[in-house]
Length: 241
Length: 247
Ligand code: HEM
Ligand code: SF4
Ligand code: FES
Image (tube, rainbow over the protein chains, first blue to last red):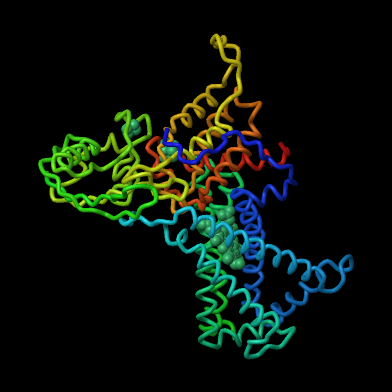
């Protein structure tokens, strides 16, 4: 087929015995699988989180009661706040695994195409092209979000046990609204490409199913972005105060 | 028609190259793209200049040799091979950019010729079935369900042209590799090596320096044989299945 300039053996005799997890992590498909599974965990969390946020429209007692209930969830089997801490550990692991795999794969992908075409052709969709920077924006947002509404460090109100008042305080500032708006649009775009991508990675793609998978991804992206943004919108318009 | 060509010229694997401009006149719209390049090369030879090196063999769209990127698209504006692309898809006065496949795993040999032997090594690591050779086996000895035969045939159409790699922003060979995996893993004859085939071919693909898949879909858009993007998903499923089975 082509000129052989590099002598190589073609039969693989170097299949080192290794655990399934190690072999998974060594291959590009395996790292992508880690991204798909960790992405799916974060996605499930985001859906639950978005629905939980809508409590804000029922007033301070509903919202703060819901936040309290989250801390008692699982009792008496689990100790106070244990459920929340288990969730946090799982999510942290997911974010780290997702980010690390994304970093390593991105480096491989960039190295695999070292020379650009002089004539730039059609470009992929906006969501597809912004996965890397969108992911970085989301990572930075997660840090800010925790300092704002979990620890209260950067929150103008910052009263623990009073999420309702803290949320209103955040969205009373212009920068709070800007940061959350940018991040939620980034989430929408990330999920729009990510959902279909994860399905494809996990082997769920097929010619007959691809259209439905794309539509589901688009729907999820829209519902998440609109759902999350309804909270700052509510505060801005005075529906929530 | 008269055309301006900007062609990547590179003396050898280790030298720098540049886009070089040429004019060609009186090109017939019925010529194939390769015939147009032949016309240019004849002129260059008459002028005592070195002709443009490009790969070609069958000139009927089945060997996959004639890879080049035309105006930023692998094999140019039509979904076919360069040898089957006709000049009627261009207009008088056009400027056409012609570049080699760009991928770390496909180093440039000269001008538009790249070394695609990384594909051979992927095939060599599992793209076959182990069977006794000699006299042809009885055709009905191994029944193949119609659906499996169709899937296998569709994927056997891959001609190893490398357009998928050239079009992919990650220089990924997932579409090419998946075509062979789906072809052989769909058939009963491919059954005994079902797991080792996918594990070994994917490992070779990674070792050769091809990138991963980000589901951009450029490969399937560029593929002259219509290998679908979802074949990559089938390969992923086969891969994860083989890993679980611990083959
Ligand atoms: C640490 C911050 C993050 C970074 C650096 C990041 C980066 C990336 C990158 C580079 C990709 C691959 C893009 C592609 O396939 O073209 C990706 C895919 C994905 N991301 Fe993220 N992301 C982050 C956070 C998130 C969050 C918060 C979610 C939750 C919704 C998420 C869900 C997904 C999903 C489901 C995929 C698809 C996985 C696959 O392709 O199989 N990511 N991310
Ligand atoms: S999958 Fe299509 S584009 Fe890729 S090598 Fe095969 S025929 Fe060419
Ligand atoms: S020369 Fe054989 S496919 Fe074009």
